[in-house]
Image 1 (cartoon, one colour):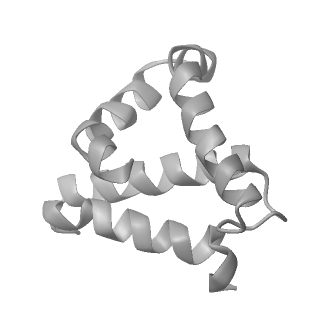
Image 2: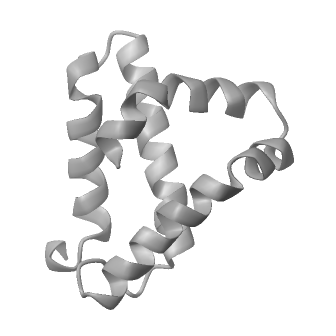
Length: 99
């Protein structure tokens, strides 16, 4: 999932800055559902923490991906590392075995 979304991470940031929160959520509702369901499945399978909501994990994912993309755009992170940094940071926070 992360590998597929890294190329459009800058677009996420642009949409977030240029539109109201309601517009962003309305346009991203389908993607939100897919990602949230991924986290819910991971929770059922014991891969992800159950003390955090799947929706919160989705929001955290967006924030991490957007932040990493912005850091790369500003030269504070290598572009090739956006996906890896996002994945490692996310899994350290939501992974069941990482606590």
